[in-house]
Length: 50
Image 1 (tube, rainbow, N blue to C red):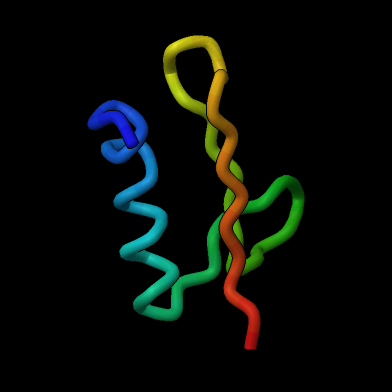
Image 2 (tube, helix red, strand yellow; image 1 turned 60 degrees about the horizontal axis):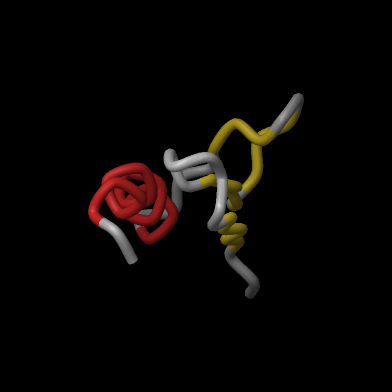
């Protein structure tokens, strides 16, 4: 994983690990989507499943 993508993901991963709900469209959810800043070649979807 490139450092640019990690710099985008890290704050979201940290927040999810600490129980935070994030803005996900029009709702609050324990998930997020992110794309690599190099044109979106890598897409990541992460969500908490309990």
